[in-house]
Length: 145
Image (cartoon, rainbow, N blue to C red; front, side, top):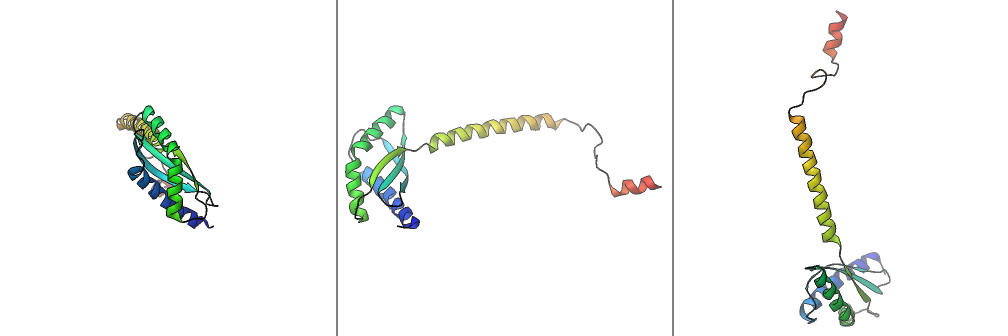
């Protein structure tokens, strides 16, 4: 199978899993979950579904347990919807993108603060030498006279 076909099916799996979690899976442990990505191996045998959960660590753990218990239902429904000879096995992974984005935002804020301090220090500073330390053609002509 081609890489484009696997990507197309992975996108379809992402939508299917999101719909199944919203409509068919009635587990009370399932929190406010968002399916962020799905990836499918080239042989179409294994699907990795990435998700995020709104809430604390306990909600993440209970959602992971709910997804694990619903994995068989999700696999069979995905297999029926895709019409493949073999339904891909489904594995769920907590997406670390929100945490990484938060860390990047913190680093960017530190960089902004450091830039503001440098700009504040440079506001009243004067050059150590001449205001224009570069040689100009006019200066060379004046030296020859």
